[in-house]
Image (cartoon, rainbow over all chains, first blue to last red; front, top):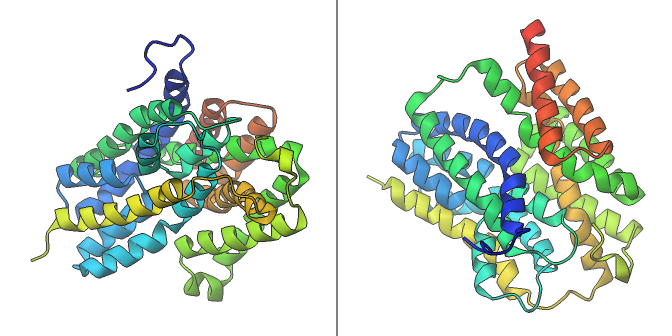
Amino acid sequence: MANRATTKSPFLEGVRDGVPIALGYFAVAFSLGIAARNAGLTAFQGFFASMLCVASAGEYALFTLIGAGATYLEVALLTLITNARYFLMSCALSQRIDPRMKGIHRYLVGAVVTDEIFGITIARPGYMEPAYNYGAIAVSVPAWAIGTALGILMGNLLPARIVSALSVALYGMFLAIIIPPAKKSVAVALCVVVGFACSWAFGAVDVLAAAISPGTRTILLTVLLSAAAALIFPRKEDETDAQ
Amino acid sequence: MRNNYLYILIAFAVIYLIRVLPLTLIRKPIRSRFVRSFLYYVPYVTLAVMTFPAIVQATTAPIAGVAALVVGVVAAYLGGSLLTVAGACCAVVFLLELILV
């Protein structure tokens, strides 16, 4: 895709960091495929949806609505809600763009801002390198789309204990992203610990769990806790590119 | 009769706009210290919120998920790479569930 000529290529680094993402995506996509099959999608439709959307909660919502025969408007609205966090992530990424970068990369990199790819992008210091993202995308998105299609075709073929073990790969990756900066910054450490606690509380308290869907919970807690952290621990000017 | 491809294309259009609009509209560095700080903390809070308690609910045996969380935090604290940390989490779940499930 890009930077084939360079020896120490950000594209290859992206491929390397994309492998654990691809493994996790495959397992998650497989179970997503089972949901898509229940909604009446063909394997090709599942593949098509996953290649374009690359969104776990968003696609799950989409397949559920298709199965229920929802209106197109409902699909648009629920997609907006379940994917609103990507808006915040892209806002954060926009601050890491080299002003000299070609404009086309904004449209291409932006198309695949997922939780995981955002995570590994933001974990690199300095300006964003599009080739790094393309490397991670090249291995992880096909795994996501093929996993969805296989889930539709084969249902419960993978042994349950393999699916169970693979399903924590994604969370392991999240931890690898959030723990190292939490080690260096009290503010980030507090964000992580309070984030864990609030997320647990929202799910455990019946009234809150019934009123607020997991997607909305993520949006709400992200906005509230990040705003609190920004007020209590404002960042200094020269800290922008750290981490 | 509604069309599955149209459903998918509508979802794609909405997701694409959500992802690309901030990247194409915000072309200058943000000056506000609050907004910059806010955006700095967003990914860590989001990922933390999505990790717990979901990691405990993802496994067949919840205790295996707890073990994966502990192992993942320790491995990441010790400086493990993405693949190492993710692999360690998977391995501990697989081994524990061989005994438990």
